Image (cartoon, rainbow, N blue to C red; front, side):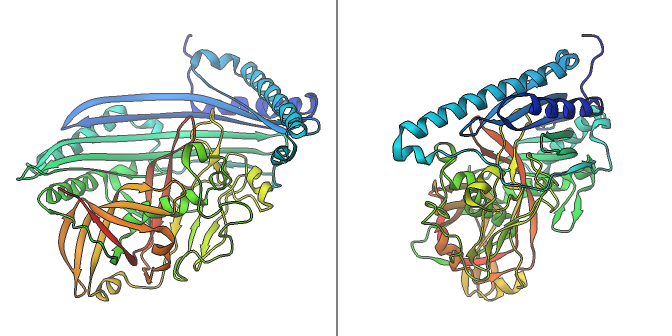
Length: 525
């Protein structure tokens, strides 16, 4: 194999060839209506330490692509094909891409023929099959460079190893109650090329760096507390060494971040369990807790593929859209103080300028002052509803078929001072940090646990409890929101899973402090 390597600069050689290939084959293949091709090259490195000792480290690279073809005679359908490659394949890349287009084309033609015959044979049931259409978008040609101070590809692996080892050793020695810790760090560059037969030619490079901390603490009475949290951004290693300081996105250096989590786990191992209450009480939730809440009860049910039942078998449905006649569009689903939106222009893991079908990024409002107003969509699902595409069609790797995914999905900031939100409460509970969600399949009910739960008495924060959260009906909870803070913060979410095969995506969620009513649910321990 000689000295062949895979790196992001290799796309400079292939951009023109890929564009010519897509346009040539779109003109040559009979009944071909559309082709798009995504080609991705990534380089990165990662390191893991456990209890102050190195566990492993890795420097890796990869290249992948996928093709979508829309073709057919009477009825149009999509066909997909994708692959991942190694160094031995690079010299024959053009051949593989051409063969991939042909395979996707054959699948599209077969799907179109099957769809057409079923429409004729199945009577009224056949009317549920429609010709594949893509809503119109602005076709763009653009180059978007990565943003970083420290180039992820130039960081010595030894430096990353030293970082995680030092942090893990510091966490281990920080408190005798810390019995296990694992520190993970990764920094990488990914370059994505999108070419379509419509004329799109988009070249986006993204830096991504994150750190994950896992700690287990055991208290004097044997109570075990296991917690994990991450920080990260679309930047270089400076995210971990210096922290993050941007509007809406703030994080300490990884060392301080991990020590704070360890301290929480140690203190919680001595705390009393959270009580369970049969009646609803006043609940204040901090921005971190709300980041998981907005993810689960607003983000996922606002994905239009889920709402249209395309994801039912894998991920569930959405109470926002029972069917095209019975849905919440234009109806009140929350207090007038509540607004929520998804916006790829905001900083963090959820940031991008174009999605994976070349649609320019834009903010989509889901809830506007209590009224449900819209879904994240793709060009195909936008065509079904007759709406405008809003750039939320993303895949975690170019070899996968994209899915409708969150970008930066947030509750909007309000006008209240967070301190005043607490001072106004005679008795209630304050939930800090997110932990574990449990959500009904249409997202109409939820139970989400917090890292820490504090009792509030006469406007003052009191005793801290462990192992608890809240249970609520989603609409009732949102309708009862009576205060929204002005302290919007956006957090990295590193493990949102969706689809089959599973695609685990990094994205962003954010929120200000909020106050509502719910049942407090504690642990039996």
